[in-house]
Length: 527
Image (cartoon, rainbow, N blue to C red):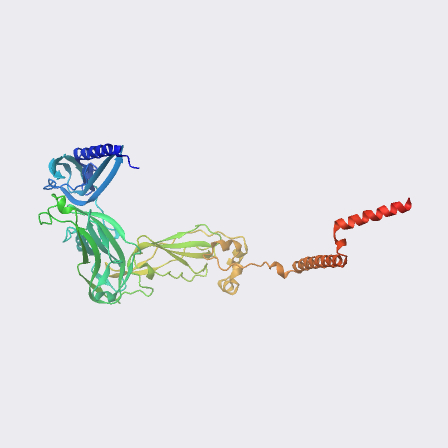
């Protein structure tokens, strides 16, 4: 049943809430954070308390040195102690382009048809920290490639570029190439393609090995800061000739609406004109790069050349410098540098009757996502067979230097060692002639101490026999089966004997009463 006496109270409460909402509109502004460095991004916020209507006006007073772009709105509504309160925050991305102190002065906006003053807000901008640099192996490459990577893009919002260290290559040479997508910081974007895709017919002459995941970076180009997505790829030309290559990528980018129709003025934004930004789907393409691929020269080509092209260095490492005769030691050849490490093969040890060797083990540790830079370790297990050995074996690796256009040879300096006489059987075998060593079983020259130094574990063999092959196992099973059969036989006989008795005699109580009566009759007869 409705109580009509409550109508005046409800009406009064609603009137008070409407009056509080109408008189409680407060407009404020702020920078978050209040201190930035050149190139860093922050936000400028216009806060409207007491109304969810969008403010209207001529726009935010421009500040030379600050790039501003409308990002979106946050709205909230709450009821506290019977009073409702709403808040709307209008957010603008801010990028500091130069150091200094900035103050956006007071300006007027209209909310729900009434004029309100937005208070001033201040921002301090300090000098910029160091910018993002290119990968380490770009240092020392062609100046034109470095210049291309730092040029300002044609569009102030989004660009796609291709980075190459050199444009003159050799067949089989691996180089890193980077497809770089840059989007102006503060602009929302979405990549529609799995990654940059080759454009044109020149890619048939190349093999590509892209990284599994793209890299993220942040770079300032002139006064504008970009968020960059980089796809590193190892590119290897397969045949000689002149080719043109480029990459394409599809992205969706949110582009702001400019009030004055110019692209270079980002200091003044109208609130109303930037509530809805334009979302455009763009098909980006890098500039076409022309690549000249030359065949490897035949003159001066070493016989042991396996196709390694790049810049490498090598050194030897040994597990001990004072081994005993017949003691296995580990000789490691470490190759560092940049290039196609997959074409570097383990060099063969020179034939020497004073050394016994085993097949090497090869490991590669990449230092970048595409395996262009890293270290290759080749481990040999060798056994000195004579006390006359004074140094490790000589090792040679041939490769082609694409910058100099010449074949080169890596010859790491052998390590001095001192071989001590051994006291075991292997030491005695080492004193025999080389012909006798060749005729002996190789297993006789190695004792159990050498097994832990073998590069591979090899097959694991067990000599234990399963238990069911033993006679005791089957005897135990037979005894258990006989006991079980005997118990079943005994139990079956018991059940059959009970079935032969009269029905009444099967009851234990009936048999007890019968015994008592028999005992009573015997007692009377005796009396």
